Image 1: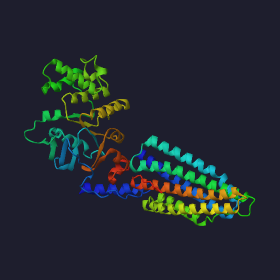
Image 2 (image 1 turned 180 degrees about the vertical axis):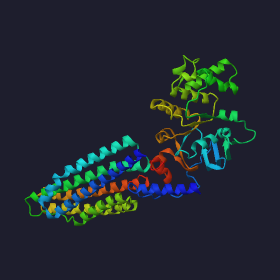
Image 3 (image 1 turned 90 degrees about the vertical axis):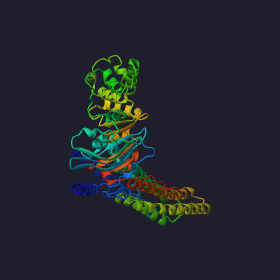
Image 4 (image 1 turned 90 degrees about the horizontal axis):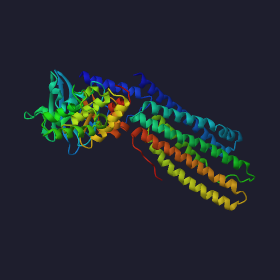
Amino acid sequence: MESFLEVTDTVYLSLHQKDTILPDTKGKTLHKERETVGKPFVENPRMTCREVNVYYGEKRAINDVSIDIAHNEVIAMIGPSGCGKSTFLRCLNRMNDTVEGCRVTGDIRLDGMDIHDKSVDVVPLRARIGMVFQKPNPFPKSIFDNIAYGPKIHGLAQNKSELNEIVETSLHKAGLWNEVKDRLQQPGTGLSGGQQQRLCIARAIAVSPEVILMDEPCSALDPIATAKIEELIAELCEQYSIVIVTHSMQQAARVSQRTAYFHLGDLIEVGRTDRVFTNPSHQLTEDYITGRFG
Amino acid sequence: MPTHQTFHSELDKLNKKLLTMGAMVEDRVRKAVTVIETHDEEIITSIIRSDYQIDDMEVEIEEDCLKILALHQPVASDLRFLITVIKINNEIERIGDMAVNIAKRVNVITQSATDIKSGFDYGEMSEHVINMLRMSLDALVHRDAAMARQIFLIEEKVNEIRNQAYDSVLNMLTKYPEHPGCMISNYLLARHLERIADRATNIAEEVIYLVEGEIVRLHI
C-alpha cells in the first residue's frame, strides 16, 4: 500500500511540475496498472520471463514482471535507483541464489528450458548466460588465464592449441587482442579500467554464451573506454542477446534496440528504444527520462 | 536535482520567448491586413522598419535551442518541444516577412498613378488568415491538437479565395491594362496572405507532433 501511495504522489507531483511546459498528457497512461505498457513480448524469444517476483525476506522487490529477451538484441533496463532492474537482471542467470534471504518465484526460460528446474546445474547455466559487472573484476591471474579458465573448467578445449584459439578469438571479439597480444602472460589486473572490462567481456564470451548480462558495465569508465565498450556491444549483438542495466539514459538510447523501464519493482513500459525516447507511452517513463523525478 | 531545475526553467523561458515572438508577429499581420484597406503610410513604414526585431528574436531563440540541445540532450516531450520550437520559430519569422511583403505591395499600390487601386476585396481572406494564425498560436499555447486540426479546414477556404482573387485581378487587368504593376501587386497580396495561411498550417502540424508524438502533414 505504501508503495502505491508513493507512486500516485510522484505522478501528481510530476504532473504539477509539467504544467508550465507541457500541460497536455493526453494518450499517456497515468494511473498505476499492473499490466506493462508497450510490447514486452517478442516472436521466437531467446529467454522468456513470466510473472517473476523477487522477495528479500518479507519485502517484495520485483512485482510480477513478464518480459521476453529476443535473439540478437540489446535490451536496456533503466529506472531510478532501487527500482529493481539489477535485481531482475540477476534473476536471469540465478545470481540471486547466492544472496541470503532472497527468493525468486515465477517462470524463467532459456530456449524453452526452465532455469529453476531441479535438473539444471547453475555452473553451465551461467556459462550460457554470462555476466559482466559494474566494476571490472579480472581474476588475479595472467590475461591468458583469465580467458582460459572458463573453457578449461567447462571442458570446451580438447588440447592446448584449441585453448589458444579460444583465447585469441575471444580477445579479438572483445576488441582487445591488438592491445594485449604481446603480454598475454602479464596479470590482467595490470590493464587499464576499460581494458579490464573488455577482458571480463572476453572472459564471458570464451565459454560461448547465448546471453550476456551487463550490470552498468561502463559506470566506472571514462568516455573513451565507454565508447569502446558500446561499439563492442553493437558488434556482439550479432551473435548474442545482451541485457544491459544502465543509469545512463544516453547509453541506453545509444546501444539498445529495446528499452524496459522499471519503477518500484514494476515493469512499467517496454518498447523500441527510438519510440521510448521520443514518445513514451507511460507518464512515469516520460517523467523519469525527462528528469522530472528520479 | 539542480541541473534539471535549470534545464526546465530554460525550457520555460524558451516557451515564453517563442510566445512573445508569436504575439509580436500576429500584431504585425493584423496591421498589415488593415493597411490593405486603409493604405496608412505610417503603419506601412512601421511594419517594414521594425522587422529586424523579429529577425533578432528568431536568431536568439535558435541559439537558445542549440545551447539546450548541446548541454542537456533532451528526450521525449522535451525533445519534441525543442524540435517544435526550432521549426515554429522559423515559421513565425517567415510570417513576419510576409507581413512586410504585404506592406511593401500596399506601398506600391498606394504610389501607383491609377485611380483603380483595388482588384479584389481581401476582407474575408484576411479574416480567415488572421483566424488561422491566432488559432495556431493558441493551439501552441494550450498544447491543443484538436484546435490545430481545425486549422486544416480553413486552409482549403483560403486557397479557394486566392483562386477567386486571381480571376478577379485578371479580369481587372484586362479591363484596365494601363497600370499592370498595381494589379500584379494586388494579386501578390493574395499570394502573401495564402503563404501566411500555409505557415499557420505548418505551425499546427508541429503542435500536433508536440502533443501526440506523430508527424502529420496536410496535403492539399
